[in-house]
Amino acid sequence: MAITVGVFQMSGGGKTTSIVINPDGTYNPQDYKGMNPETTVIFNSDRKRLPFKLTGWEEGKNVFTNSNSDYILGVLKKINEGTKIKSVIIDTINGVMLDKEMLESKKLTFDKWADLAKDIYELISICNSMRDDLVIYFLGHVTLYTDIDGNESKCLITNGRKLEKIKLESKLPIVLFGKVDRGMNGDNKFYFETQANRSTGKTPLGMFQDFQIPNSLKLVDDTIREYYNIK
Image (cartoon, rainbow, N blue to C red; front, side, top):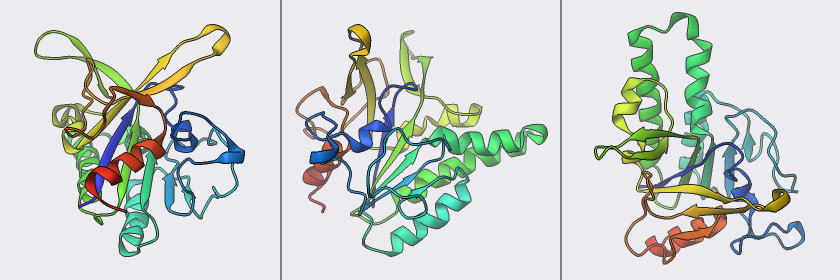
């Protein structure tokens, strides 16, 4: 089965830019070591311009600006039947959820909300059942919830009560939360937290040695593949 990963943070927290950040935490177009555009597909479901401009990322080739879950599933089926693509990024899963909610906002009945929850649940379930050498990233926005001890914790924001009850993180073996250290004059530093810190974050035992790592999806991808011995 494929490895599914949640990468969650507020807007502007470095989720999308993590795609092109080198494993050492730098962005260097001249010495680029981020996610490989030859083996990576991005679903730009937020339908906005990507916050980077690099040769190799091309609309219709490895970038698909679409938030429709049926369309995404169709492309995923083709990816699963091939061998070239190794990593898939859905940016963001919230964009997929909003697509159905906003387009049908005038006729959202109980059954429609149930369909929305079913479609998102099905999308993640199908991703989990894909090729063993695939790593699929669900980027998403966060909200606060109160845990059973009465503490506020961060989790993925979802649409509707059914998805809240499911807690989509329970379907993902790896969940990273972004963190920003605010510096003077906008000199911010961006990280991923690899374990729960008043959040639904989690990673398998021994996968990451450090609690805080650079917000490089390539670093995460390399670490996952080494841990599970997949290429």
